[in-house]
Amino acid sequence: MTPNDEGCQQLIIGELETVGFSCESFNYGTVHNLWAKCGDQSPLIVFAGHTDVVPAGPLEQWAHPPFSAAVSDGLLHGRGAADMKGGIAAMITACQRFTTSRSEFKGSIGFLITSDEEGPAIDGTRYALEQLQKRSEIFRWCIVGEPTSHKNLGDTIKNGRRGSLDGSLILHGIQGHVAYPQLADNPIHRAAAVISNLIKFEWDKGNTDFPPTSFQISNIRSGTGARNVIPSEVEILFNFRFSPESTVNDLQKKIETICSQHSDHFSIRWESPSPTYHTPAGTLVDIVKSAIHKQTGLRPILSTSGGTSDGRFIAKTGAEVIELGLMNDTIHSTNEHIRVTDLTLLSKIYEAILVKLLR
Image (tube, one colour):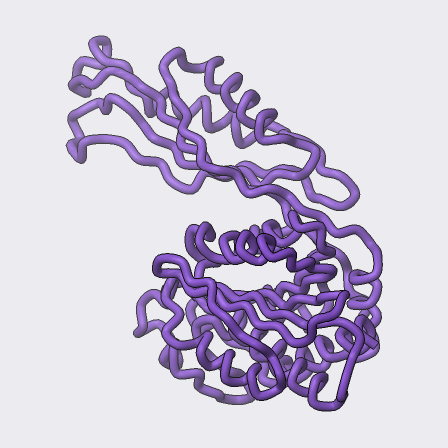
């Protein structure tokens, strides 16, 4: 679990070194980061992913122990099976077949793997990229193995992601006895109107590539625990998933305006935002589409919906970045699982992409 690697990256190193990859670590603090590369020519295609997972939750709710990788009825069960250790396994086996079947190929292949994607994502991919850029590693293309498929493997390619902005809104009031409300100011009552207006507000309409910006409240905290005390403040934790049609500054100003219409006493604490990224149709997108169609018969759609990923850091390098991986219907849930046949199929898709890019 984040940020622990528990030997995953050592297993990956063992697999990649057998087919000519040179491997090194860019560990920072408690975070493990692996950089592996085969070849020294341009162009460079990088497979990116993470070995860390979210907690399993109550173990008794799992049909199979979450860290046993049990296979039953054609399904591989376990925390991280879909998100995204299965994707990493498919990447590795694809590269093993590709490199062993060719004495040489045009370009290079890299792996950038971290144990800090599900956590703060500060000392993981972002840190490793800083070290790689110091020695002028130039990523041409990158495939992030996040689980992107919905109904069938390969039906969706993520070619971008909305940005993410977290905030904490505190409405201040005056503490008092519930029997004497005239002597107090209940911030929870004020919060009702604020929340109503925030959830009804249209932040933007999105565009042809991105869905509209969404606003969600994740937590509301207030009170002393006593039923007869009006609290002095209420804290509302919220998140924006924003399209390129809104900037961080736009969203901050809009929410402050809405809050000021209902309260004179409030404060907002903002967290560091995650930026949007977008890879338009081009070499990588076209080749990935073609490879999926050849292996599955599907014509995948392009999507920028969903959460954030480390693709946002890699896109800053100027690389074309897409995300393509396993089914995402059980990620972060109890009894996370994948179809074993999907592992084989995804590996073949990755190999087909390599053949087309580095032929």
